[in-house]
Image (cartoon, rainbow, N blue to C red; front, side, top):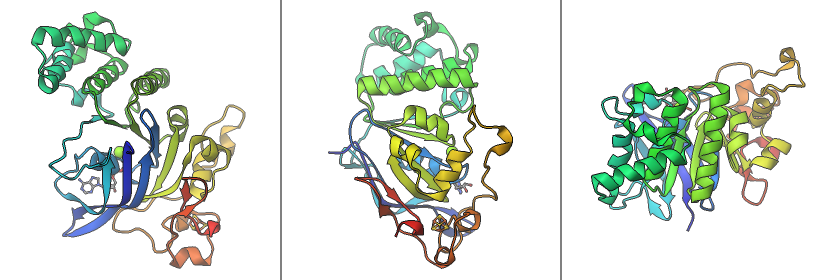
Length: 311
Ligand SMILES: Nc1ncnc2c1ncn2[C@@H]1O[C@H](COP(=O)(O)OP(=O)(O)O)[C@@H](O)[C@H]1O
Ligand code: SF4
Ligand SMILES: [Mg+2]
Protein backbone atom coordinates (compact mmCIF):
# COMPACT_ATOMS: atom_id res chain seq x y z
CA UNK A 1 0.00 0.00 0.00
CA UNK A 2 1.61 3.25 -1.12
CA UNK A 3 1.20 6.44 0.93
CA UNK A 4 0.35 8.26 -2.31
CA UNK A 5 -0.50 7.20 -5.83
CA UNK A 6 -1.58 9.65 -8.52
CA UNK A 7 -2.40 8.24 -11.97
CA UNK A 8 -3.40 9.97 -15.20
CA UNK A 9 -4.69 12.98 -13.27
CA UNK A 10 -6.39 15.75 -15.24
CA UNK A 11 -7.75 18.76 -13.34
CA UNK A 12 -9.81 21.42 -15.07
CA UNK A 13 -11.09 24.87 -14.11
CA UNK A 14 -14.28 26.35 -15.51
CA UNK A 15 -13.26 29.72 -16.92
CA UNK A 16 -14.90 31.89 -19.60
CA UNK A 17 -17.70 29.35 -20.09
CA UNK A 18 -15.48 26.39 -20.73
CA UNK A 19 -13.47 23.73 -18.94
CA UNK A 20 -9.72 24.11 -19.44
CA UNK A 21 -6.94 21.72 -18.41
CA UNK A 22 -4.75 23.10 -15.63
CA UNK A 23 -3.09 19.84 -14.59
CA UNK A 24 -2.62 17.27 -17.36
CA UNK A 25 -1.92 13.55 -17.12
CA UNK A 26 0.04 13.61 -13.91
CA UNK A 27 1.53 10.36 -12.56
CA UNK A 28 3.28 10.59 -9.17
CA UNK A 29 3.78 8.51 -6.09
CA UNK A 30 5.25 8.31 -2.61
CA UNK A 31 6.57 4.86 -1.84
CA UNK A 32 7.08 4.89 1.88
CA UNK A 33 6.21 6.65 5.11
CA UNK A 34 8.39 9.67 5.78
CA UNK A 35 9.26 10.08 2.10
CA UNK A 36 9.24 13.65 0.84
CA UNK A 37 8.22 14.41 -2.73
CA UNK A 38 8.89 17.96 -3.94
CA UNK A 39 6.85 19.43 -6.78
CA UNK A 40 8.84 22.26 -8.38
CA UNK A 41 7.92 24.73 -11.10
CA UNK A 42 7.38 28.37 -11.98
CA UNK A 43 4.40 30.32 -10.69
CA UNK A 44 1.16 29.40 -12.46
CA UNK A 45 2.24 25.91 -13.60
CA UNK A 46 -0.44 24.20 -11.49
CA UNK A 47 1.37 23.22 -8.26
CA UNK A 48 -1.21 24.60 -5.84
CA UNK A 49 -4.06 23.12 -7.89
CA UNK A 50 -2.39 19.72 -7.66
CA UNK A 51 -1.83 20.13 -3.90
CA UNK A 52 -5.42 21.22 -3.28
CA UNK A 53 -6.69 18.22 -5.24
CA UNK A 54 -4.61 15.85 -3.11
CA UNK A 55 -5.96 17.49 0.06
CA UNK A 56 -9.53 17.32 -1.31
CA UNK A 57 -9.79 21.12 -1.23
CA UNK A 58 -10.30 22.10 -4.89
CA UNK A 59 -12.41 25.25 -5.39
CA UNK A 60 -15.97 24.88 -6.65
CA UNK A 61 -15.10 25.79 -10.26
CA UNK A 62 -12.56 22.95 -10.49
CA UNK A 63 -13.02 19.26 -11.24
CA UNK A 64 -10.97 16.13 -11.60
CA UNK A 65 -11.75 15.24 -15.21
CA UNK A 66 -9.78 12.00 -15.27
CA UNK A 67 -7.43 9.82 -13.26
CA UNK A 68 -7.25 9.27 -9.53
CA UNK A 69 -5.45 10.22 -6.33
CA UNK A 70 -5.11 7.49 -3.71
CA UNK A 71 -3.72 7.87 -0.21
CA UNK A 72 -2.95 4.48 1.32
CA UNK A 73 -5.23 2.95 -1.31
CA UNK A 74 -8.15 5.22 -0.47
CA UNK A 75 -9.48 7.46 -3.24
CA UNK A 76 -9.41 11.06 -1.97
CA UNK A 77 -12.35 12.03 -4.20
CA UNK A 78 -14.68 9.49 -2.66
CA UNK A 79 -16.71 11.07 0.14
CA UNK A 80 -17.06 7.70 1.87
CA UNK A 81 -13.34 7.70 2.64
CA UNK A 82 -12.21 9.77 5.57
CA UNK A 83 -8.57 10.50 4.99
CA UNK A 84 -6.62 12.79 7.27
CA UNK A 85 -4.53 15.12 5.15
CA UNK A 86 -2.92 18.20 6.69
CA UNK A 87 -2.19 21.19 4.50
CA UNK A 88 0.39 23.82 5.42
CA UNK A 89 0.02 27.05 3.47
CA UNK A 90 2.43 29.87 2.74
CA UNK A 91 0.51 32.52 4.60
CA UNK A 92 0.41 31.58 8.28
CA UNK A 93 -1.38 34.76 9.28
CA UNK A 94 -4.47 33.95 7.23
CA UNK A 95 -4.31 30.25 8.16
CA UNK A 96 -4.46 31.07 11.88
CA UNK A 97 -7.44 32.52 13.73
CA UNK A 98 -6.41 35.99 15.00
CA UNK A 99 -8.94 35.84 17.87
CA UNK A 100 -7.70 32.61 19.45
CA UNK A 101 -4.46 31.95 21.30
CA UNK A 102 -1.93 29.58 19.81
CA UNK A 103 -2.72 27.10 22.62
CA UNK A 104 -6.46 27.21 21.91
CA UNK A 105 -5.87 26.55 18.20
CA UNK A 106 -3.56 23.59 18.72
CA UNK A 107 -5.73 22.17 21.53
CA UNK A 108 -8.83 22.46 19.34
CA UNK A 109 -7.42 19.75 17.07
CA UNK A 110 -7.06 17.23 19.89
CA UNK A 111 -10.48 18.17 21.28
CA UNK A 112 -12.14 17.86 17.87
CA UNK A 113 -10.29 14.89 16.33
CA UNK A 114 -9.47 12.88 19.41
CA UNK A 115 -12.25 13.92 21.82
CA UNK A 116 -9.65 14.92 24.41
CA UNK A 117 -10.58 16.95 27.49
CA UNK A 118 -9.74 20.66 27.33
CA UNK A 119 -7.20 20.39 30.13
CA UNK A 120 -5.38 17.43 28.57
CA UNK A 121 -5.46 19.07 25.12
CA UNK A 122 -3.72 22.15 26.54
CA UNK A 123 -0.99 20.01 28.04
CA UNK A 124 -0.59 18.31 24.64
CA UNK A 125 -0.43 21.72 22.94
CA UNK A 126 2.57 22.62 25.11
CA UNK A 127 4.32 19.43 24.05
CA UNK A 128 3.57 20.23 20.41
CA UNK A 129 5.10 23.69 20.79
CA UNK A 130 8.24 22.19 22.29
CA UNK A 131 8.35 19.72 19.42
CA UNK A 132 8.53 22.58 16.91
CA UNK A 133 11.14 24.46 18.95
CA UNK A 134 8.88 27.08 20.54
CA UNK A 135 8.63 27.96 24.26
CA UNK A 136 5.63 26.34 25.98
CA UNK A 137 4.61 29.78 27.27
CA UNK A 138 3.52 30.54 23.69
CA UNK A 139 0.23 28.71 24.40
CA UNK A 140 -1.20 32.00 25.65
CA UNK A 141 0.10 34.16 22.81
CA UNK A 142 -1.96 35.43 19.88
CA UNK A 143 -0.79 34.94 16.27
CA UNK A 144 0.01 38.65 15.79
CA UNK A 145 2.46 38.50 18.71
CA UNK A 146 4.62 35.98 16.83
CA UNK A 147 7.17 36.42 14.05
CA UNK A 148 6.57 34.89 10.62
CA UNK A 149 8.87 31.94 11.34
CA UNK A 150 7.20 31.30 14.71
CA UNK A 151 3.75 31.34 13.12
CA UNK A 152 4.91 28.86 10.50
CA UNK A 153 6.14 26.61 13.32
CA UNK A 154 2.69 26.82 14.91
CA UNK A 155 1.13 25.71 11.61
CA UNK A 156 3.53 22.77 11.53
CA UNK A 157 2.57 21.90 15.12
CA UNK A 158 -1.11 21.98 14.12
CA UNK A 159 -0.47 19.81 11.08
CA UNK A 160 1.37 17.23 13.17
CA UNK A 161 -1.31 17.34 15.91
CA UNK A 162 -3.83 15.96 13.40
CA UNK A 163 -1.73 12.80 13.17
CA UNK A 164 -2.21 13.02 9.39
CA UNK A 165 -1.74 10.23 6.88
CA UNK A 166 -0.15 12.75 4.51
CA UNK A 167 1.03 16.38 4.66
CA UNK A 168 0.75 18.77 1.72
CA UNK A 169 3.01 21.79 2.31
CA UNK A 170 2.47 24.55 -0.25
CA UNK A 171 5.40 27.00 -0.30
CA UNK A 172 5.38 27.07 3.53
CA UNK A 173 8.59 29.09 3.83
CA UNK A 174 8.30 31.45 0.87
CA UNK A 175 7.31 34.48 2.98
CA UNK A 176 10.27 34.06 5.36
CA UNK A 177 13.79 35.46 5.22
CA UNK A 178 16.47 33.06 4.02
CA UNK A 179 17.85 32.06 7.44
CA UNK A 180 14.43 31.49 9.00
CA UNK A 181 13.39 29.63 5.86
CA UNK A 182 16.27 27.19 6.22
CA UNK A 183 15.51 26.57 9.91
CA UNK A 184 11.80 25.93 9.34
CA UNK A 185 12.62 23.68 6.40
CA UNK A 186 14.98 21.53 8.46
CA UNK A 187 12.47 21.34 11.32
CA UNK A 188 9.73 20.18 8.96
CA UNK A 189 11.98 17.62 7.30
CA UNK A 190 13.23 16.20 10.59
CA UNK A 191 9.71 15.97 12.04
CA UNK A 192 8.12 14.13 9.12
CA UNK A 193 11.10 11.78 8.97
CA UNK A 194 10.92 11.10 12.71
CA UNK A 195 7.15 10.61 12.71
CA UNK A 196 7.09 8.72 9.40
CA UNK A 197 4.57 11.03 7.73
CA UNK A 198 4.73 11.17 3.93
CA UNK A 199 4.78 14.70 2.53
CA UNK A 200 4.33 16.59 -0.72
CA UNK A 201 6.42 19.75 -0.62
CA UNK A 202 5.44 22.37 -3.19
CA UNK A 203 7.92 25.09 -4.13
CA UNK A 204 9.05 27.29 -7.02
CA UNK A 205 12.60 26.98 -5.71
CA UNK A 206 14.64 24.02 -6.91
CA UNK A 207 17.42 24.77 -4.41
CA UNK A 208 14.94 24.50 -1.52
CA UNK A 209 13.51 21.30 -2.95
CA UNK A 210 16.99 19.82 -3.01
CA UNK A 211 17.38 20.49 0.71
CA UNK A 212 14.21 18.77 1.79
CA UNK A 213 13.12 16.22 -0.79
CA UNK A 214 13.86 12.58 -1.53
CA UNK A 215 12.21 12.76 -4.94
CA UNK A 216 11.57 15.72 -7.20
CA UNK A 217 8.85 16.24 -9.79
CA UNK A 218 9.50 19.16 -12.14
CA UNK A 219 6.27 20.71 -13.37
CA UNK A 220 5.78 22.84 -16.45
CA UNK A 221 2.46 24.09 -17.88
CA UNK A 222 0.39 21.54 -15.96
CA UNK A 223 2.56 18.53 -16.76
CA UNK A 224 5.32 16.74 -14.90
CA UNK A 225 8.22 16.99 -17.33
CA UNK A 226 10.77 15.14 -15.22
CA UNK A 227 10.41 12.92 -12.19
CA UNK A 228 13.38 11.46 -10.45
CA UNK A 229 15.16 10.95 -7.18
CA UNK A 230 16.94 14.05 -6.01
CA UNK A 231 20.45 12.77 -6.63
CA UNK A 232 19.98 11.73 -10.24
CA UNK A 233 18.03 14.89 -10.98
CA UNK A 234 20.90 17.06 -9.81
CA UNK A 235 23.65 14.87 -11.19
CA UNK A 236 22.10 14.27 -14.54
CA UNK A 237 19.10 16.49 -15.28
CA UNK A 238 17.52 15.19 -18.48
CA UNK A 239 14.73 17.55 -19.48
CA UNK A 240 15.86 20.88 -21.00
CA UNK A 241 13.54 22.70 -18.58
CA UNK A 242 15.14 20.99 -15.57
CA UNK A 243 18.55 21.85 -16.99
CA UNK A 244 17.51 25.48 -17.35
CA UNK A 245 16.12 25.61 -13.80
CA UNK A 246 19.30 24.09 -12.44
CA UNK A 247 21.55 26.51 -14.24
CA UNK A 248 19.53 29.44 -12.88
CA UNK A 249 20.27 28.47 -9.25
CA UNK A 250 22.76 31.04 -7.96
CA UNK A 251 26.09 29.49 -7.08
CA UNK A 252 28.83 31.07 -5.02
CA UNK A 253 31.43 30.14 -7.62
CA UNK A 254 29.58 31.61 -10.60
CA UNK A 255 29.31 35.29 -11.46
CA UNK A 256 25.68 36.50 -11.42
CA UNK A 257 26.05 37.82 -14.98
CA UNK A 258 26.64 34.24 -16.16
CA UNK A 259 23.34 32.96 -14.80
CA UNK A 260 21.04 31.40 -17.32
CA UNK A 261 17.58 32.80 -16.92
CA UNK A 262 14.97 31.01 -18.98
CA UNK A 263 13.76 33.33 -21.71
CA UNK A 264 10.07 33.96 -22.28
CA UNK A 265 6.96 33.38 -20.19
CA UNK A 266 5.29 30.07 -19.36
CA UNK A 267 1.96 29.54 -21.17
CA UNK A 268 -1.34 29.75 -19.28
CA UNK A 269 -4.19 27.19 -19.16
CA UNK A 270 -6.32 27.34 -22.29
CA UNK A 271 -3.36 28.44 -24.39
CA UNK A 272 -0.84 25.64 -23.99
CA UNK A 273 1.16 25.36 -27.24
CA UNK A 274 0.73 22.43 -29.60
CA UNK A 275 3.39 19.72 -29.50
CA UNK A 276 5.73 20.02 -26.54
CA UNK A 277 4.40 22.71 -24.21
CA UNK A 278 7.96 23.89 -23.56
CA UNK A 279 8.93 24.26 -27.22
CA UNK A 280 8.64 28.09 -27.50
CA UNK A 281 11.29 28.40 -24.76
CA UNK A 282 13.39 25.33 -25.44
CA UNK A 283 16.89 25.87 -26.83
CA UNK A 284 16.93 22.28 -28.15
CA UNK A 285 13.54 22.21 -29.90
CA UNK A 286 13.44 20.43 -33.26
CA UNK A 287 10.72 19.79 -35.85
CA UNK A 288 8.91 17.00 -34.00
CA UNK A 289 8.59 19.20 -30.89
CA UNK A 290 6.30 21.67 -32.69
CA UNK A 291 3.67 19.10 -33.67
CA UNK A 292 3.80 16.07 -31.40
CA UNK A 293 3.29 16.03 -27.66
CA UNK A 294 6.00 13.99 -25.94
CA UNK A 295 4.82 11.21 -23.66
CA UNK A 296 6.54 10.29 -20.40
CA UNK A 297 9.45 7.87 -20.97
CA UNK A 298 10.86 5.74 -18.23
CA UNK A 299 14.52 6.60 -17.70
CA UNK A 300 15.31 4.92 -14.39
CA UNK A 301 13.72 2.35 -12.12
CA UNK A 302 10.79 4.66 -11.43
CA UNK A 303 11.54 8.10 -12.87
CA UNK A 304 10.43 9.49 -16.19
CA UNK A 305 11.06 12.37 -18.56
CA UNK A 306 8.68 13.97 -21.03
CA UNK A 307 10.85 15.04 -23.98
CA UNK A 308 11.40 13.87 -27.58
CA UNK A 309 15.17 13.80 -27.02
CA UNK A 310 14.58 10.59 -25.07
CA UNK A 311 12.77 8.43 -27.60
N1 LIG B 1 -9.95 29.05 -8.91
C1 LIG B 1 -9.38 29.20 -10.11
N2 LIG B 1 -10.14 29.40 -11.22
C2 LIG B 1 -9.57 29.52 -12.44
N3 LIG B 1 -8.25 29.46 -12.69
C3 LIG B 1 -7.45 29.29 -11.62
C4 LIG B 1 -7.96 29.14 -10.29
N4 LIG B 1 -6.91 28.98 -9.45
C5 LIG B 1 -5.80 29.00 -10.21
N5 LIG B 1 -6.12 29.18 -11.52
C6 LIG B 1 -5.18 29.23 -12.65
O1 LIG B 1 -4.62 27.93 -12.78
C7 LIG B 1 -3.24 28.00 -13.11
C8 LIG B 1 -2.44 27.24 -12.08
O2 LIG B 1 -2.51 27.91 -10.84
P1 LIG B 1 -1.83 27.36 -9.52
O3 LIG B 1 -2.26 25.97 -9.33
O4 LIG B 1 -2.13 28.32 -8.44
O5 LIG B 1 -0.29 27.40 -9.92
P2 LIG B 1 1.03 27.54 -9.00
O6 LIG B 1 0.67 27.11 -7.62
O7 LIG B 1 2.03 26.65 -9.67
O8 LIG B 1 1.43 28.97 -9.07
C9 LIG B 1 -2.89 29.49 -13.19
O9 LIG B 1 -2.94 29.88 -14.53
C10 LIG B 1 -3.99 30.14 -12.39
O10 LIG B 1 -4.24 31.43 -12.87
S1 SF4 C 1 10.38 17.77 -26.55
FE1 SF4 C 1 11.57 19.16 -27.78
S2 SF4 C 1 10.88 21.21 -27.19
FE2 SF4 C 1 10.21 19.78 -25.63
S3 SF4 C 1 11.78 19.83 -24.09
FE3 SF4 C 1 12.27 18.13 -25.45
S4 SF4 C 1 13.64 19.01 -27.00
FE4 SF4 C 1 12.66 20.72 -25.93
MG1 LIG D 1 0.92 28.11 -5.79
